[in-house]
Length: 193
Image (cartoon, rainbow, N blue to C red; front, side, top):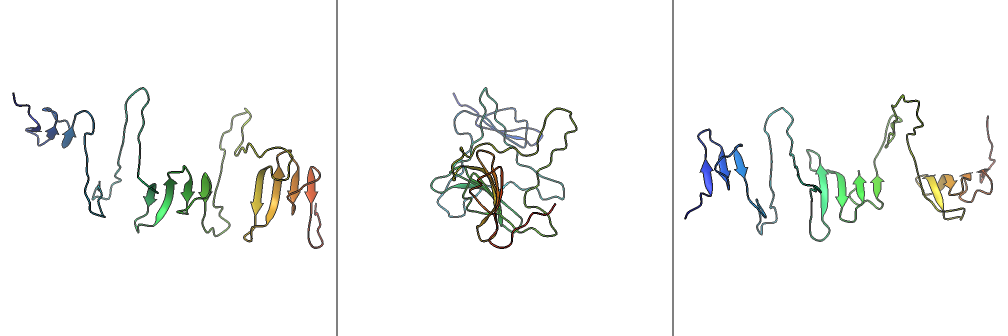
């Protein structure tokens, strides 16, 4: 017996693998449902809505353990580009995420140029709850060893300006704070209150 593979409904909907298409193109089946391949260097699938209204590409997975996967061979990455094809956000196969950089060197690498005193990263906690809350929590960094730290800031030359060690000691101008607050300056250091 012949099985109907392609159906065109009276309203114009097209069905592949279904005789009752609910959408303009309704594909149903098991295994790989849609495959687009070839040898051209510019192989791509384009979903575009040519209107002034927002468009979206929606991916949904339904199961007890749903997942949506983006995979690529070699040095593949998931990229988000702007209208000029500049790469703004990069997800590498290693798990590193880059914002403003295409080669993130850490799990989250943010790079850019800020002006008008605007921060590159802005973290806000707008909760008005009376419960204990925080805007930023950093955990880790080891113990009191000189290489163990929880938080640090650097200048453009790579020098550490502000340092919080794993044991809670804070260093300004030093990465080896010998007290809870250790201020060190190559010149005439001072503290103003």
